[in-house]
Image (cartoon, rainbow, N blue to C red; front, side, top):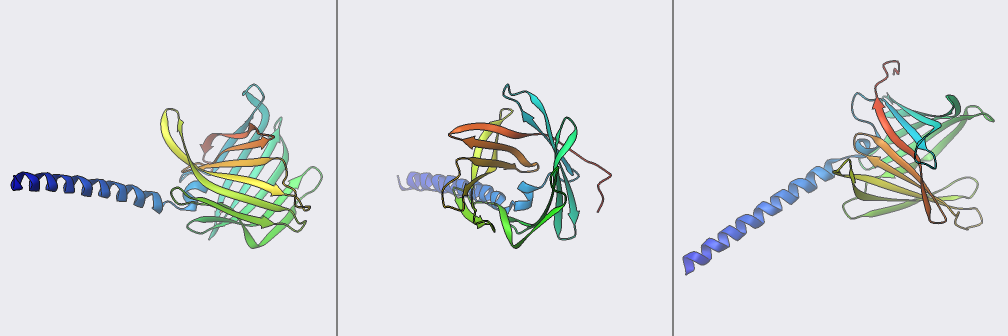
Length: 224
């Protein structure tokens, strides 16, 4: 009887140790991922293409292209929005990374009404944080006009092409200078090896897709 109990105990102990080992390995792999893994496209890719679905979920005449250029210890991301192949807005964002955050340090924007408007962020504006398992991270940023932008980062899981996957979901809300909450949200999803995967808008509890990822490419003309 004693031998039988010892045998069962040893089997249960071995099983428990095996489960702990598997969980520890999974958690370790999860924890080793950095902000770069979710903000930047996979190695050897420097161009991301997006489309804006119309109300019938078909591709519209709007398109978005983002180029990623490594510059020593930071990246420059040129983000162009086009309508009927004509550029309507161009933004160049300079970003830096910590293991768990992405910092926006400079923005250059060009529209039909204003060219090369430069905005510098000192201290840098945090635009992405990598949450821990089960965490929701919140932070905020107040601009010179008194508007307060609030961010919340969390993990979401879903099926993509019948494959279980996950993304960092960033929800952005705005408090106007009078303190009232603007009736609208912007929601960003960042996936490992892709960067920005989807952008949604929510107004009066109605959710719609603004931009959705189409594909990654490599453009050899983009140089340091």
